[in-house]
Image (cartoon, rainbow, N blue to C red; front, side, top):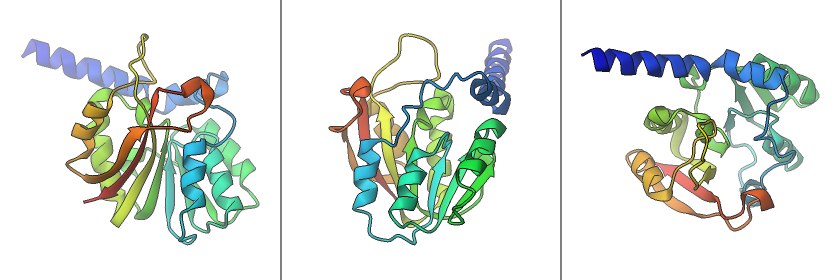
Length: 208
């Protein structure tokens, strides 16, 4: 019993560490190593062939939201950006102030409500504590409309240091997502940016 209480206390501690104050401090101090300065080629390639420009699109944990820039230039009309860090959201509101098709929310992803056709995953899953990954998959599924899709890239490598980011592998990810999704694609990403070559999986999952 004492051991279980200790585990819960430790988990709560880490959840607090990775909450809004943690990420807001990262933005304030310029500790945004996940930011590569442009949209992922794997995602821009997918978006370029996505036909329905009026689909409701969500990018959770969006950071600088480079993918949203690409969406707007490609005619998408219903984009929601979600981030828990006020510093990030403030920057986004300035960045997209002339884009009425972009809605920006400062919210906890796990408390967000809405229905989307497409959710884009880019360095958000790897920021979740490993013990919350099944909760992440379940929440994504609940936010998607019938036949909605989760598309993005996941790290397929284990990192030497404690996260975030937290890594993993294809087998682990299949176990997490299969209860909620049909796995159309989960394979080595052929067009990663050079620093991440060989360490990413491209995923295209549809809601069950």
